[in-house]
Amino acid sequence: MLYKIRDEITKDYDVIIIGSGLAGMTAANILGRNGHKVLLLESHNKMGGFATWFFRNDREHVFDISLHGFPVGMIKTCRKYWNKELADSIVQLKDVRFVNPQFQVQTDFTKEHYTNVLKTQFGIPQDTVSEFFEYLATMNFYDNSHVSNRELFEKFFPGRNDVTRFLMEPITYANGSTLDDPAITYGIVFSNFMSKGVYTFRGGTDLIIAKMKDELLKNNVDIKLQTKVDKILVENGKTVGILLDGKKISAKAILSNANIRTTVLNLVGEEFFPQEFIKKTKEVRLNSSSCQVYMGLKKDAVIPHIGDLIFTSSYPVYDPERLLDLKVSSRTFSVYYPKESRPQDPDARVAIVSSTNCHYADWKNLSSEDYEKEKEIMIEDTLKGLEAFLPNIRDQLEIIEAATPLTVERYTLHPNGSSFGTKFEGLDISMNLHKALPGLFHAGSVGIIMSGWLGAANYGAIQSNTIESYLGTQNV
Image (cartoon, rainbow, N blue to C red):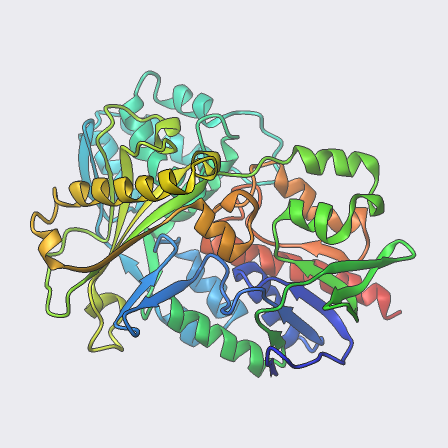
C-alpha cells in the first residue's frame, strides 16, 4: 500500500528499506516479489533518488536530472528484476559526440566503432587495441589490483593524452572516476558500455519511476514518502527496526540506500560497531558532485539533430581536475528530442541539460550573493558553449535555470551533494556492513563501480540476495 503522509505505520516488517534510489527500489521489488513483508521509506516527495525529474510552467516543461545514458545490461536487469514492459522501453542512443581541441568524433559508442576510430583517427595498432579491450574484459570487482587508471593508460597508450581523453572522459562524467582511482573503477564501467553502446529509457524518468512504483505496489511493498528515519535501532548486537517520528517500527533486517557514511555514523552510531570498522568508514572518501543547467525551448521551437550526448570542452588537454573546476571548461549536453524521448506526449518540448562535474566546497564556501553570481556565470557560459551547435539558441529558450551540489544535497540528503556516492574504498564497507552489525545492509552508489542506473540497480539485486540468506537464518 502507499501510505499518506499522516498515516501511522502499525505493522512489523521483514525488511525496512531506507531510501528509494534505484538500488533500494530494486531490492524492495525483489524481496516483495519473493513474499517478504517490505516497507520502503523515502524522505523526498518522489521516488528514484538521483534518477529524478522536475516540472516547470504548469508541467509544460519536464527536465530529467541524470545523464541519460547507461549500458545495454539495463535491459536484462529490468527484465529480470522488474518487468518486460520496462525492459522494452529501453532504446539505444546512437549519436554520441566528442568536440574538443584535440579531436572531434561522432560515434555510436560501440566496441566496433571505437576500435575503428582508435586505429584510423588515432593511429593505434590493431594488436594494441585488441589487447586493451581484452585486458578490461578480464576485470572484476573481486580483484585486488593496485593499478591506477593513469598507469593503465600509460601502459597501453604511453604519452597519448588525446587517446586517454577519448577513452576516459565519458566515464569520468558517468561515475566521477579520475586518473588516480583504481583502474577497475574505469575498466568494468567502460566494458559494460562497450558491449553494445549507450541506452536510455524512452518516455522519460517520470514515466519509468511511476511504472516502477506500480510494480512495487503490485508486489505488496508498502511505501511511504516524505518520511525521514530518525534512527536505526540495535538490540543485543543486531538491528531490530527503526525509530520513525519517535515510534519504533520493528523489522528483521534493514537495508539503507542512504550514503554509507551517513548510515553508519548517523543513522546507527559509532558505539554499535567495532572500532576498526568505524576507522575505515571515516576514511571513505566522498566522490565528486555535479552541476546542471536546464534549458526548456519554446512550444514551437525545432532544432536540428546535433547529437544525443555531446562531450564538449575548450580545455587544450584532458585533465580530470579541470573537469571539476568552478571555472568550467568542459561540459556534457544531453539533448532530449520529444519524438524520441517522450513519444507518449504530443505536447512535449525540446529539453537540453548541461552537466558538469565539480567540487562541493567550491560552491558551499560561497556567500549567498557570490553563489547566485556564479550560477549566472555558469548559465551564461553554458549558453556560449551551446551556441557552437545551435547559434540561435537564446531566441528559442523559454526557461533556463541551474542546479549545484547544494541542490543535490538538499533533495537527496547526500553529504557534499555527491552525485556518485563514494570512492572505491566505500564498496568494501558497504558489502561487509552486515558482518559488522548483523541485520544491517547497504546498497547504493558506492565504490564508483556501483554507480549510475545499471550499477545501482544491480547492487540492489545483489544485496537482496544477501538479505534473503540472512532472513533464512532468523526464521530457523
